[in-house]
Amino acid sequence: MAGGAAAGSAWTEVNRVKGLQLACPECGGRVFARASQHRVRHFYHQVRPLGCELANESPEHHLLKLELAMAARAAGWRAELEVSSETRNWRADVMVFDENDRPFMALEAQLSPMTPDEARMRTDRYSRGGVAVCWVALQDRPWERVVPSLRVRFPRQRGEAWAVWHGMARYMWAPCTLKAKAKWVHITCPLGDTVKWILGGRVRAHTGVNGTVWWTASAYEELAVARARMEAEAEAVERAAVAERRRQDAEERAVAAAQRRRDVERRARERAEERKAELRRLSGFFERTGLGVAVWGAFTQMVRSASGMAIRYGDLSPAHGNGLLVYARPRWENSGFNLAGVVCPDPGALVKWPAGLTILVPNQTWLSRIQAAARSPLKVAVLNPTTRRILCVRSTRTKSGTDSCCVIRPVMCGPVRSRRPPAW
Image (cartoon, rainbow, N blue to C red; front, side, top):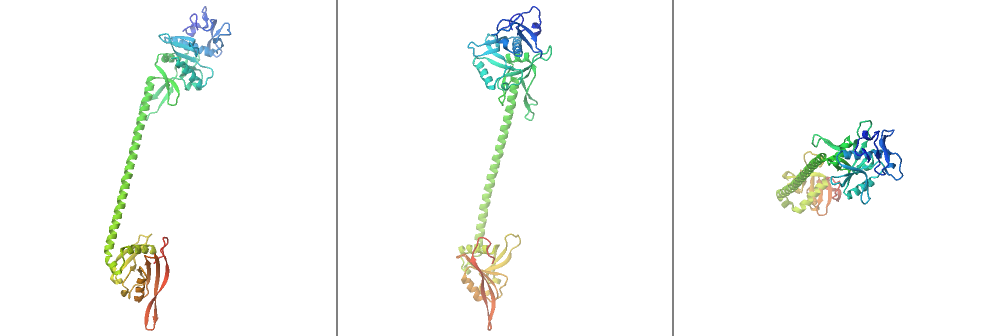
């Protein structure tokens, strides 16, 4: 308020002081200081003028403007109420002027409703004119999170100062380690000190990671930056460690895959060498029976398919007509191999042939030779690698006069099957 001792004066210097005349800075009319029934200190017009904007504002708004102006003046700055720009595009509740007498910060007592978009628009309007702004409210408002603002509280009793209880924040982080929690905490402080800090540049508007704006000191911003940098570095270290673990895992998988390929190749070479050794071992058998290597491979495959067992070839057995011994065991068992048959024995050696074994031959020619020479019951399996058909026969003894012979009767005949092959 202009006039007398009102400008920059304490409330006790203007309230109920005899002989002191106070004037409205808007219309020049006489005003008086008083406290409302809610103890809100304010000024009122002796005669309410129709054209005075100050006369139409609430006591709370009027008093808050005065308090902001007095706080700025107490801090050593020139502050005036209701200052408009030259272009009339803004009108500040309280305008603070710098040492060159230029407007540099508006203090807005915003008690009426306002949307966040309106707050941004009005703040930008001040900014285009080179003026900063601090919005001041008495209650929680949605716009105070998007523009520099303070939330203040009226003095509750005589002698108590106005207090800021939201909008001034410090960064709490102790000890300064990643394990320690860190957060922004709003503090309570006198309004006069807060205005002094803001105008003097000791605090400035800070925008948090979530877009919320508050006032804080540079030291707290630096502390928050240090925390963010430490978190970023720790995250970078963790990402590098994860990347290194993935690289090591990929390298180990590549090494394991290469080892598996080498093992497969080694086993293939071993099997090839074993097959060559097996063929060399059976060269005499091939020469005697007339079986070639290609025919032998197909014949062996049919033996495994027809028997449904794991097969292993032994030696040529003179006791079994120089035939090739065949050992077998069920595939799902781990027991030892048992003698199960003989391949292409010499028909002239079948007189004492054991009845429990099966003779394995590749064609009907061999079956005929076995049939002509047989003198005891026996089992014969014809596995033809050319036609891929299997014939299983069993012989019985018959007598005709003084002679006896073996008659071979077919038991089963059919092609090799991929599933559930016939046992021989």
